Amino acid sequence: MAAARGTIMARKDTDDIDVGLATLPPTSRQTWSAIAVTAILLAGVAAVAPFADTPLVRIDSFIPMVDATIFVTDLITSILLFSQFSIYHSRALLALASGYLFTALMIVPHALTFPGAFSPTGLLGAGLQTTAWLYWFWHLAFPLVLLAYGWLKDEKRAPFGLWLAQG
Image 1: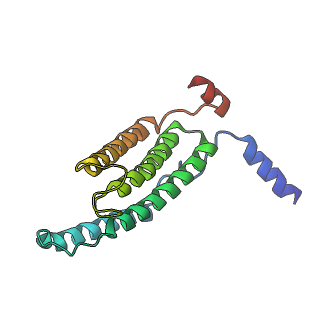
Image 2 (image 1 turned 60 degrees about the vertical axis):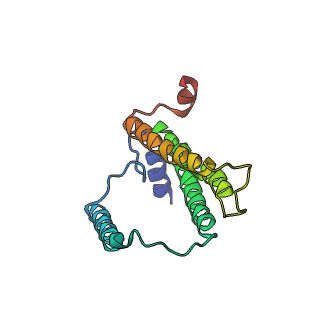
Image 3 (image 1 turned 135 degrees about the horizontal axis):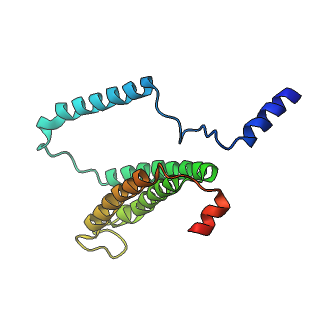
C-alpha cells in the first residue's frame, strides 16, 4: 500500500508528464478506423446522391428532434471539454469547449424560430429569414472556433493562476 502511495505521489510531483485524452496521439488502429468510417460515409452519400431531387414527406417534428439531439451532444461535449480544460489549463481546450457551448446555445433560438416546428410562423417574433440567419451565424462561428483551437493547441501552458493573471 505504501509503495502504491509513493508511486502516486511521484507521479503527482512530475509536471513534465501530461498523459490524457487531450495529449495522446491516435493509435494506428484509431486512424484506420477513422478512415474506414469516412469511406463508409462517403459511399453512403454517393449511394443516395441520385435521389437528391426527390422530395420527402414533410414532418414538422423533424427539426426539433434533430436540434434536441444536437443540443444534447454539443452540451455534453462542451462539459467534457471544460473538464479537460480544468485539468490541463489549455487555451485551445477552452476555445473548443466554448465553441461547443455556443453551438448548443444557438440551437435553442434556431429550433424556436423554425417555421412549422412550434408554430406556423415560428416563435420569438421570427421573420421570414430569422431562422436562416441564425443557421448561418451558428455554422460560420464554429469553424472560427476550430481555427482558434488549431492556432492555440501547441501553445505552452502556464500554471492556472498565472494564466488567469495574463488574460
